[in-house]
Image 1 (cartoon, rainbow, N blue to C red):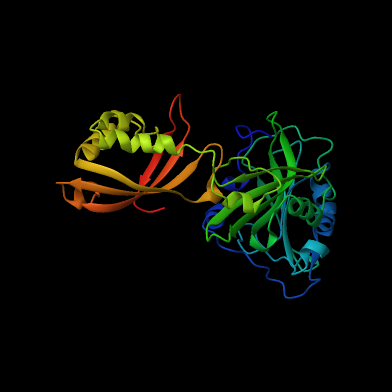
Image 2 (cartoon, rainbow, N blue to C red):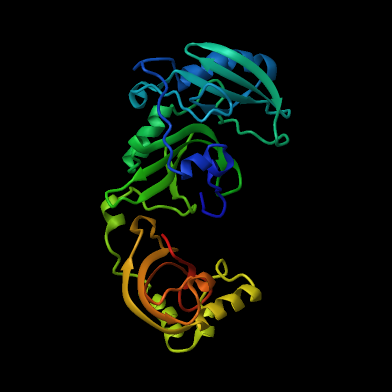
Amino acid sequence: MTTRRLVVLCLLLCVVSCSLAGCKRTSGSPSQTAGLTSVEAAELVWPEAKKNFGDAVLWRLAPVEERDSLTMRLASDWQDSDRSAAWFVWYADPVGENWMMFSIKGNTIASTDIGTRSFSTMAMGADWPRERPAVAMKDAAKAAAAQGAEFSALTWTEFTYEYDSDSHKRPGWVFSFSETLASGGTLTYWFFVDGITGVVLRAVNDRNEDMVLPIDREALLKPRTDNHEKDLRQFFGFISTGQPEWAVRQLAYAASPDEATAQRWLANFQSLSALTVVSVEQASLEQWTAEHEFYKVTLDVKTSESPEKYGWDNGRSVRWVELIPQGGGSWKVAALSLSP
């Protein structure tokens, strides 16, 4: 799957805001063997789905009690037992526009509902799961763990569908994580496991950028010798040598999307009568990729303007800078902030 074609699935789910904030969803089941496995949950409701839709397709399966619940009910040993104290299961009608939704609590069906899908009829592959998922949740988790997923930091999991590199829907398990690293930084990422083959398709960070697998946390936290610090120093050099217009041109589109914004930046930089770079430190190393670099820059500045106008105080000042490649030439400044 390619970065352009595969949209991060969790951005389409109601749980994403919680995931990105780093909140943890813990198991609501005190028992090590409470409830059904992912396979048993689908098999329990399959006869009813088949009766209503015929060739019903397993569309989504999440270890929760209700459709919009954010609390997973995974058993404490779910990575071995595959069990959850509750499940919510969606079955799609492959020739219509409806689906059936089942709430499972313990070992029984708690409720059943039929609703209209938000998308029209579509071709559903003959190899897509029907009666049961082809890959159990625990087996998908083992595949992700082998590629460096840290399941103590799990925030969400479910079986669902996403687009592949040919713009076709594909079944799979998604696992979301929000992990605190030894540096104190937070690494938010998603694993996608093919729901038919059980193969890890990819892992992405919270900018939907592919991560190198298996995840090497030590490597993530090592200072980078291959970097674009010279481009960062060039940016501040333009300001210190009285060429603020060139500094404005080195701003990324996200920071300066139009002429009015560019003029505000120009006035900001022109307000500095002197600027010296005291130090440059690599920052947020766990977030570095081939498309992003982060720095903590200590400056010494002189200005006649009040701090309220442009945010500059006379003397030492710290700025947090994000660099990205955009267009040709030097990397561009995507963010210039007072805080990380």
